[in-house]
Figure 1 (cartoon, rainbow, N blue to C red):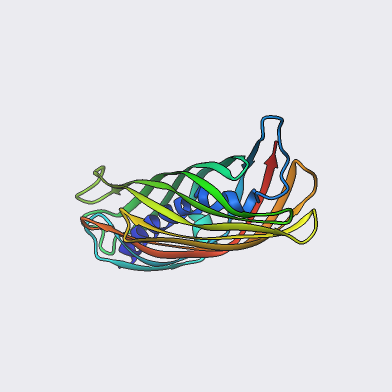
Figure 2 (figure 1 turned 60 degrees about the vertical axis):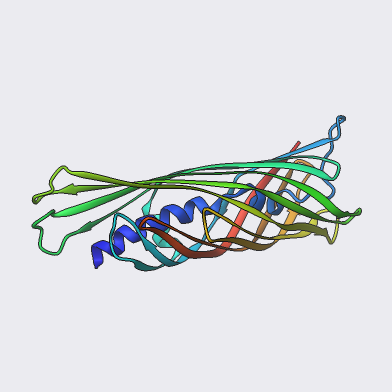
Length: 263
């Protein structure tokens, strides 16, 4: 079961990293829509790198192996992360907004078989792309606060590879992958206590390829200038997906930090 647990861990860590980024989720936290800098055309733009220190709890199954329960800290995820790229952006004109996000992650884990007959060790590598495109409309807005209704499509794509070393399966590889799309909708908003200090948050829920896809967060931000702001908060996200032996039913939660650039 240790090998199964490591394979399950790699799957969960991969999807957890993918779930870190969703423009409908991140943009409102890092780019509150009230009191932003406005261009002559009326458009406001924001790009925002971010970092989510999330742990993960849930159940996973892949490669036809038995279902495994995972309870991983942020440190476990960090130890298995080989490479990650995350970027999100938003364009807004009056009450209307368009947002998008792209994320790529590359994770790995390894484990040793108990007897070394079929293989001495197994390496698991997972590559994930996640992207979201959505739109929003402000249903309430004044000088110090705003509340938007948002909706969009979230695309997930996961490709995992098992590589066997030693034993009868030496040099063999096996791949398993899943791609699905979820529709999400909800509310996001911001409230400025002062021109610099604000609170922001969101709540989203959806489904599609997944049986359930939900996300909620609350953060505090500070605008150093009209161009740069920072935010710190807490976020929780849950996904329940299963299809043809591939299963990911988990919740990620933890602190989030970010920097937003407005122009």
